[in-house]
Image 1: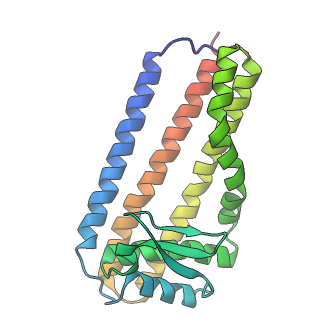
Image 2 (image 1 turned 120 degrees about the horizontal axis):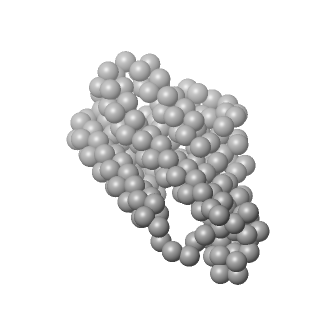
Length: 228
C-alpha cells in the first residue's frame, strides 16, 4: 500500500471549500431559524426549563437535573451527570425556540432512561473518539514525514472512529427531536409543534453536514493512501 501527500491537490482544495461552505450554510440556517422562532411566544406560556421538566416527568426521566450553561445554542445533555444544560435564553425564555431546544435535550435524557440503543453506542464511543480525535493527526503526520504507510493507516483508522461517531450521532439526534415534537404535539399547542419541527430540522442539518464532511475527508485520505 502506498501513499502520496507531498503536495496540496486540487481535490483537497475542493474538499476544504466544500466543508467550509457547507458548514457556514448550515450554521447560518440554524441561527436564522432559531432567531425567527425565538421571537414567537410559546403557546404553553411557560419557560423552556418548565416544559422540559414536564416532559422528563411524564416520560420516566424525572430524576434528570436541569441546569444552565453559558453561551448561545450551547444546550446539551450530559449523560454522565444525567443533567440538561440549557443556555440561559432557553432555560428562562418562553419562546417557541426555547421550548423546542429544551424538549430536544430532554429527549436525550428520556433516551437514557429508556435505554435507547444508539444512545448507548454513542456514549460507549465517546472515550474512544476523544482519544482518536486528539491523536490521529499526530500519528498521520508522523507517518507521512517518516514515509511509514503503517502509521498512516493507523491514523486513518483512528479518524474512521470519528466518522463512525458522526454516523451514530445522526439517529440519536433525530430520535431526540422526534420525542420532543411528539411531546409538544400531545400538549395541544400547534404553534409549538410547528416551530419545533422547523428549529429541530435546521439543527439536524448541522449533524448531517458534519457527517458528510467527515465521510468526504475519510474518502479523500483513503484515496490518497492507495494512490500508486
